[in-house]
Image (cartoon, rainbow, N blue to C red; front, side):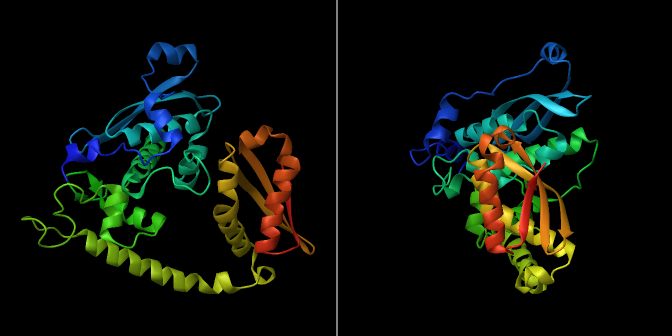
Length: 320
């Protein structure tokens, strides 16, 4: 498939209302000028990810309040398929009023769930999921640059789409990808000339193909899973504190966070303490949850109830 065909087909009838609404009427698209940044009493930072040649380019504009360390304004410009516009627009909204550390916590689940029309229907079909991968990479790169960090360089595997080995390996892990076709759906690697998929797909030879990275990463995941089996099988009461923290975070990610994200909120664990027969979990609400009237009643009871059911009946959740 050519880049032109991929871009043309990236907006179809199989996307939901929220996606279509943001494509037709984006709320955060545009440039922020130095003058606007001064009016907001902040410093303007710009970050670019991707390239026109690869078919997708995203440029982020953040105004940072240096005293508070927060992004007080967030906009973007883009080149690419319409799906990228919708995902970038939501990402701009979610990064506003957040610290770099809070932006780092924005992941696929939180970003994708904000764009769903209902909890059971994915925001984008599988063949357009690459928009999420691209935007999340742009956010990670922007945070690293803002902190003055230099990300480790990773060799390009797909030169046509500009997709690195690190991107492919991370996508395989994050989305539990099982085939090279899924890798293409989630990263665009192999979408154009297919020479990077496996030997014989193109005239050029390379050190790593998608089939190699898939086999190596899946093998590593399998070995890691074997090493973690004892933790998952161990009763909660028999875990040490670090194991309990890991188990609590796993339950929150799998069963709770999506529920909060759907209402525009989130949560983070501040501390976990042993208190006699009880395990006390201290949390802080984020986003809409921080000012919600049910944060100390219905929402809290739901979070505590799930953790009790999945882990231990003596868990207590304490919001701070």
